[in-house]
Length: 291
Image (cartoon, rainbow, N blue to C red):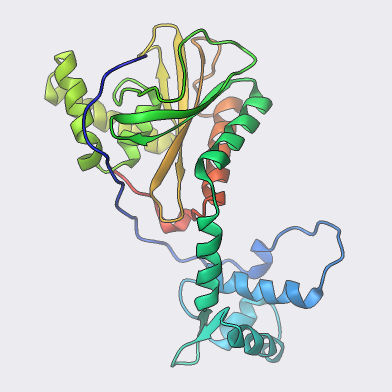
């Protein structure tokens, strides 16, 4: 699985236009955990959740309706929330999240350890499925493994932190080819193409097929393409701004690791990657970067 690489440190760009979210507060409130709390704080946060999910600043009437509260009651809360900078009121009298809400969000993001969060995610996935798994990020030579956890079904291949994977013949590489801007991964792909004596037209067609399949399944799949006896599935993790942060990959023996996107293992890997993306601040309606 070793290979030499070339290229430069690359960054990810590109966003998809956001779709409006208009879910009522009751649909997005956290479940009651049975513990006694402060009701006024819960009400305040139900108002904040409405603003967080809104597609635009809201009038008092709109906000009260979505929060399922009386306008007069919501107004009292807005006075305090505005006074503390958590909510802001514009010139038209409509309400939106305020500067302190932004400060809170940025502080929370700055304290996230992406690699640590990713390691915890794949460890939980391994504990649940028994499959070996790793985390890969984009490095200056391509997809690079940064964490690996062994499964209960030993896979006798060299998988270690620092190992660089190919773009065109690994499930992990397919994730980056699909959600990383082409200008960023193209130099690595050209190097692989030249090294293997592959016709550029064939490479371009292969990439198109890979991108379409991977986006459609939200999962990249390889069945012995890199190593004859090894199969792998890989799912993307996105950050708060919609850019690709890393790939979570499970690997196992061909014929033993199910590659169907509807299999239990695939569904759990996708669920793990989606949960981690949400932890890192990603919102589905904010869009994802793409190649």
